[in-house]
Every structure is written in structure tokens, then in C-alpha cells.
Image (cartoon, rainbow, N blue to C red; front, top):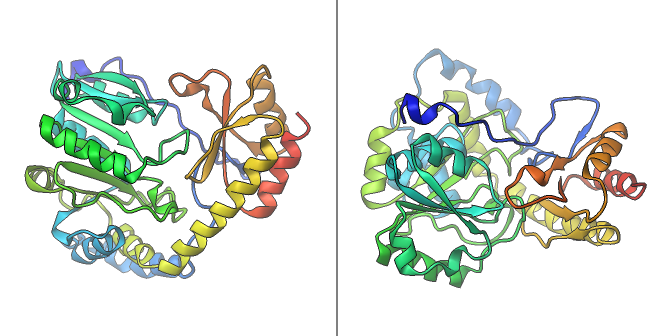
Length: 339
């Protein structure tokens, strides 16, 4: 990244509201956190009086158990986006093309542009169909699984075949698994030719913690480890993150609650909108001829913040809503029923 590449690259829009007067359906974070996590965070204050250990062995061990890989393949990062930036930085040079899905997380294209590269946009549901020759023309391929904002996860066998095609083309594959923890699908962590990015923001309801990691093999594992800044994840974040990743009962309970509530919410909202099927803790709704701005304002006036999904490439009549707790979801159904 240099000055010329960074100038003129705008910020990507995101959801979330810090207004205590509204229920935030615009950000896809768990409204619950693991029991005992606050005490762990407070106890970790003493660790802030010294530099975190290098390498942060316990955090890497917990992450390796969490996604089923070797601990030496784990590269801790201050959030999933930091892992994404690190990979794009290594893979993309000025003038390179990178295959980017759409509609999907806006930061992918932004990170490519910051490196002087050009995003080559492909519909998210057609990415796995890209042939070897087209893959070989790109410096990097990015996949979001499950995809944001649509919520659909890729078939595992199809994804395995795509991984093999990327390896054959000599093109590294970056898989953003920010929402995969909400499913029981296996991670691609430790797969040769693949770098995964994981965030602890979503599943554990701690967006301000800024803890995540990458998992890589071969030269990318070596390069990510070499270029990682020392002490880039704080001591409290390392302790809290390791604790959360070992809370298997919390993960199982969250998955079941999200699955059940997502199904109920989709059934209710489908009476008014075209609701995309989802494997993630959110639903994408096509409101058709209705005025998106009026829907957003109506919800806001009733104390709910929704995500304007028109900010995603290729969407022009959509909102996205998070799957929250049952009583909050009841409120969303009631409010949108008045639109």
C-alpha cells in the first residue's frame, strides 16, 4: 500500500448502531456473550501491565481446537478484517486483478484497491463455477462463507472442488469464515492453498474486543507469521478470545437458537417480502416496490435499526435484518407488519 493507492479509496458502509434507545438489527453480532467472559476480561487487566507473550501460545492453541488445525498454522490478528488485509497485502500488487464476489462484504474490494489492484466482480453464487484459466489471471480469489449479505453457505463438496481448481491455477484462495461458527459446517482451516480469516466479533458478541485470526499453510503461513506486528492483539483480547473459543456449550446453544429463530423470522417476513434463504445469523429481504427509505425510517421511529442493503453492490431494493433474541424478533415482526 502506498499514498497514491490509498488516496481516493472511500470507506465501505457498515451496519451497527450505538444508540441505546434502539434495538440494533443492522449488525450481525450475537446479542449474548458467554457466561463468565466479563470476569475473564477484568482478570486480564493485570496482563495489560506488560507486553503480551510472543507468540501468544494459549490463544493459538484455542483457535486450533476451535477450527481443527495445527496451532502453528494460526496467525492471531486484531479482528477478522486485519487478517483479510494481511492476506490481500501479500497477494495483490499494483495492477493485479483479484476475484471478488458480489453482493458481499464491501471491504474485500476496498482492500484490493488499497493495494493498487482491481477487483474483478463475480456473482457470489457463480464464483465456484469460474474455470481454471480465469482463476489463473487473478492474483487472489476471495470467497465469503456463508456469504454476507445473502447468508447462503457453499456446498462443501463444491467448495472442495473449487479449492483444487485454485491450487491447479496457482491462485491463492482467501475464505472469510466470519459467520461459519454459526453453522456446524467444517472450516477449511489448514487446507493447502487456502487462507481463512476468522473473527470473534460475531459469534461471541464482542465487536469491540478486536480479536480474530488467520489460518494458512506453506509460504502464506510463513509470510503472515513474518509480517505480523508483535503484540498486535492485546493481552485482554487474547485471554478473552481464548476463553470464548473454548465455550463449546455456548456455541452449540447459539447455533440452535439462531437456526430456530431464523426459520421463524423468515416464515413471518415472507408474508410481505421476498426473503433469501440463509445459513447465517441474518436475513436479506427484497422489499420489491416498497420504499426502502420509508421502511428504514418507520422501523427507526419504532425503536429498531435495520441495515440498508442497497449499499451492497448489485442490490437496489433490499434490507438486511439480524436474527436476535425471541422477544426482539417478535418486535421486528410486529413493526414490519405495519409497513
